[in-house]
Length: 171
Image (cartoon, rainbow, N blue to C red; front, side, top):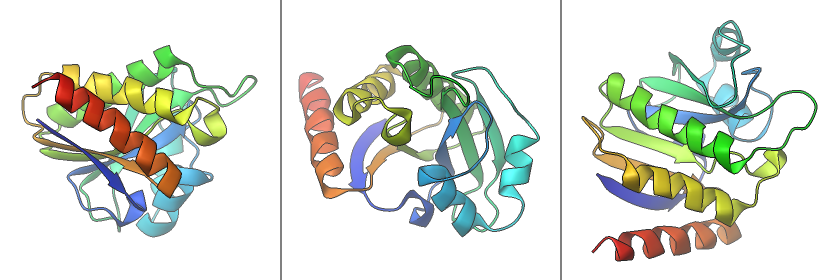
């Protein structure tokens, strides 16, 4: 399985599945979720929230509507109420469940943001390390192309460093 670091707007990506950095409420407010909601059009937020709330680490699949994907996988790496901070455990579990779900859906390509960072409060480079470890440790049935996406230049540089470190250690 190919792991690649990319930079840009996740809502502008083309893949079998795009991943929403969700909270347990599955409400698509701001950040990654807001970008996906705005570009998707249609009732994606209503479809997502009708399946929630979910437990930390769980995922829910919706239609991608106007996005250039077949599915959106909503990965709940942070709680919605109270302490809104993601943890290494919640990021790891949400990442693993995302990969397994994409495989079960027959996806070959997936674009995933660094879950649990930003408003969820987890350090970006540490979050990238957790997600990329889960990706490199995963034995896919169908997935061949997993792209981890960063939005800002600084985050992209950190993501490239993490991906480079992991891919070089596997050679």
